[in-house]
Image 1 (cartoon, rainbow, N blue to C red):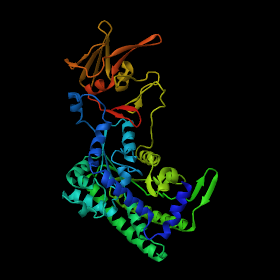
Image 2: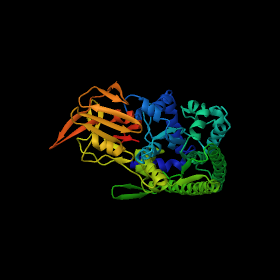
Image 3: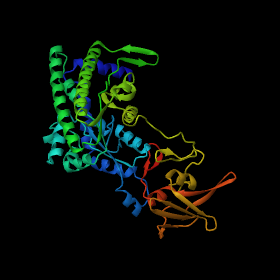
Image 4: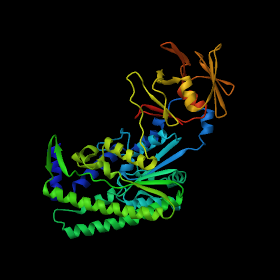
Length: 459
């Protein structure tokens, strides 16, 4: 990898076409062939995170309750693209981390992601302008060079994007990286420093114009939403470290890195100016400095060794951590589970006690009765004679009888779609275990399972 990276960086200034552009064109070209049905992938992501179980009347009734809506806008970083992605790849980018952190906050969260591969600030402004004006547009209207194979399906429904933004509580964004890639694409070994400066200034002017217009469109649609936008990180390392040895970049690569650092610095300063102006209008907008954790970890947090500037899974986790800290001043995770504990359960942002772990029966999660009712804040009545637990919460009552294949929901008998409640002896103590999804959904609570964390969230 070390030799390949050196060769890649060394050739950057010797090629008529910049490798940073070449990798992007190659990856998007590959994706356009494999992702012809990729829109279906993004449609089912929402289904993948939903817990198994029935759609109860209580759940449908509570769906209209205060849901924390997250909307993601921007480029491939928002889309969660990683080097080597194909049609079967499921993104786990910074947006997904932000969504999980919202669940940790005890929020009844949902999210939608409109990130587009290759989107520039100009394309961003064209798209959001059309959304604000309620106009239908084509991909070529937004950005003629846009090669994201999902672009037609996303851009073709500006009404949907507008509806999402209007209902948003939190809007997260990344934009600007492709503006700088556009500059890099025009630089060759014969480009003078003066010409580079002119190219950069033209790009920065476009960035300022495009981002300002795009953000104004967003804030006109969602003036009360919280907006968080990322700065831009440097993907090229200052030195190459192999074990205990460090090697300097080749001179041409070092000069390119220095130019890119200057470009990033100026772009990030533009971002600060734009955000300050919008904040002065009373908008809740912040910059999250995702660039900081990438310093010194470029090879670990990006795929630059493969001529790809996108974050790795670790890089996206670092971005998610930074976003979460900006939004909630914290980043949470579940406790380390013993090998015999299959899933963590988090209720209203608090994990159930380690002394009473969840269990699994027929791929359904079961939890100790008193722990879950205490965590929810529900009223519990236990009939020792009939071995029936009656749980009351939020105007709903659910009764489970040990070993019974039916339950009573608000006085109406229903057939269970999971194994029955059961008793389990732990030492001298005997505990009642209830099916988590059935209990939560019948009480009108949101149940979300995240396979990435092996955790079930009840909010």
